[in-house]
Length: 319
Image 1 (cartoon, rainbow, N blue to C red):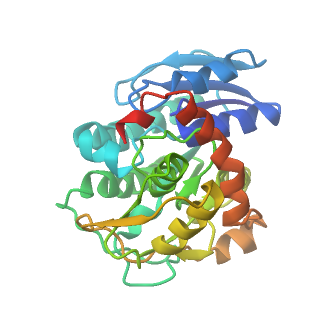
Image 2 (image 1 turned 120 degrees about the vertical axis):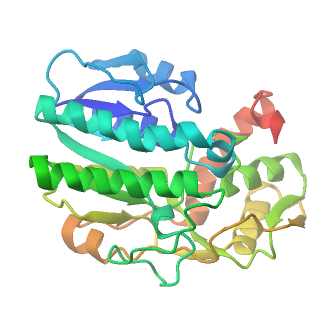
């Protein structure tokens, strides 16, 4: 297949593009490098079947040649990013999704939307099944990301129902692994960088809030399985293992050398208190479940961050 991957310079998009190339597909990567890394694209440039377009998918685009698939992964995905550029975040979730769906319609391509567990907001149902409609503050600071993804899901289903477009929707839960930006503000990257430096780990609130962390290889495998399935309903792909932020901090301290303490700061507005996917559908319909434990995944991730920190990565210095 020849497949377009938007957001191909990002953490998850670059891993996805690499997996698709490994599977023998041709990949057209697209990114505007607002939050993506040129190094992530450079590692793919020498691969057979890979080409790249620098473009903001919020603007119309014509793609030459046939396409059999589109993975729409372009979007800021960490609070630090989407709180800094909220309008661009809303545009890529709305206009960008619309443009991608238009390309899929013209090309007759299968379309997969990268949605998020953030569509559940600060959930009142736990764990979160796909049937749960969520508890989102549309006018809060996180609304730019949450509502962009909720709109993107609605638009995708409208194209599926009205135009008969072949669509998939994956709801991605917290994912981590190599190629995360050291300064992206996500809890795993923050903790690892602080632990490697021997600095206090910054915990927001008392650390009792929970998250479920999925290693990137597991996440990508679930996404690819969904793309090749016949499932048009949204599917959760995440690790159901649930940890408090304090528990995560303790593990990171152990794995990075044990020299750090913990410091607390006020909890951000609308920060979810709990987050854990119900992956019943992924197990039953995709034959998927995660294989990598949190501790093992961190051990496979920390060396990446150590190279970035010791190499004086500019983004790492902004933490």
